[in-house]
Image (cartoon, rainbow, N blue to C red; front, side, top):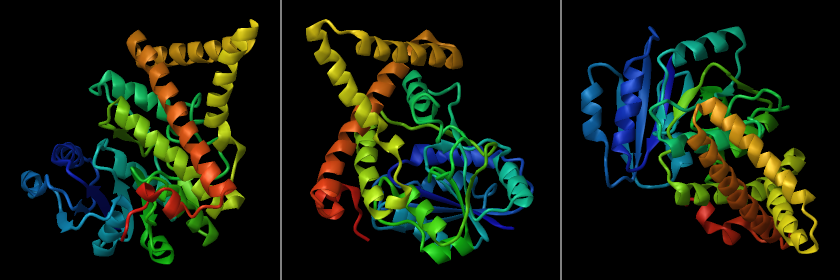
Length: 332
């Protein structure tokens, strides 16, 4: 089986350098190719590729900007492999990754898989806090951190595998972003394909974002979810409402202080205290424990408000998603 590694990139030559360096250290002995798709970047990474031309088989393509989903599709159309593995450019790949994927596919083949993400010790404290917020069972239920306690796993496109057969049947990613990966997962389910979590196929996801960019990102995640719910009501879950309920509940808890009722606010305090303790223990840092509280608040606040806005516009008012939120759709 020939693996084709599909990497879309937009103005991130430094990230590509780190990613390719990690791939050059792989202990996988079989042939594989890398298909790097430059999505209309003004800071191109073609010069970086020269460093690895003797170590890695790399195909490089430059195209007009049309978003990460379309760029992944473009790369898969150009690829030679039987199975595509998709990475974001801000990932660092452990040397055993491809061997773990190969082993898992041989033991229990599946046409689409996803793997978890972790943080390296070299990551900044904010990156580690954001990683905790995005992967902890206490926040997302662990769906990004490797939890198998869910009925159907939805792979995320920063670390995702897709067979050529599944790609050709589904036509790959749609033009919504973010949300293109759960959209693809659901369409694959409807076509009869299965998805699976490969727990040992993890990557180090660097997420080079500051607090402002993180808030914008999770707000878009919140806006995308009601759109997906409107497209695929069968897969709607009450847990998708949790961040919005969390934010509304916090506002109610503060309001109730007027009437000297503080029990609800105390529950929030206990929850944040647990977050602090767990994160500080996992990261061996009190500072990261504190920053994780900040990250989780921004995560719930941004996602929750985005979800409410989108729910009102798309579900209640029946607005067309492309008109209500044009910033979530790339024109291809």
